[in-house]
Image 1 (tube, one colour):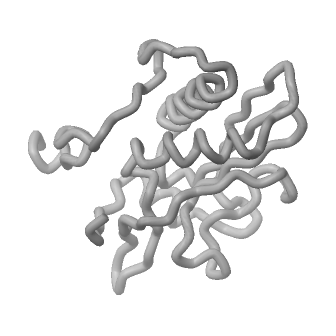
Image 2 (tube, rainbow, N blue to C red):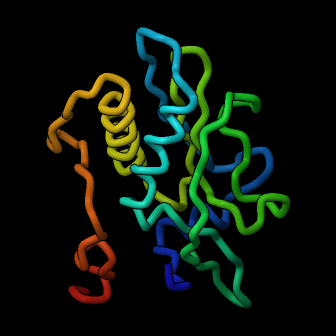
Length: 169
């Protein structure tokens, strides 16, 4: 993947300005299944789903006067839940790391995201797509790409990578 950088939008600037250790501006979306999570299958589903979301495959950096996202080849991995819910994601110790995490506990899958990356709707579609891939791999079923579930893409379409604000505003 070519190293590219992206401007942080105006709403994200608010979250960056108000981010503190006490209020890390992280939110969580979780899904509870009726069976225990298989970590190997969840990791495989995450490896398939994550590249379809290039806007989430970024690290956050501080420039001289601004923040910016930089694309990365890092792929997320899921881990057992070992931190408090909504633990900080954008702190100096986590420099050059993805600003979202996927964890599991028993039969629950958790997605935690730094709010500058997306809002709840974007995170919900990501979780639905991840869950669809997980269930497809576990049971060999095909989940249709509808109602907020994105299907597999070979390459991100140009529309997904386009800065629509720059084009239309």
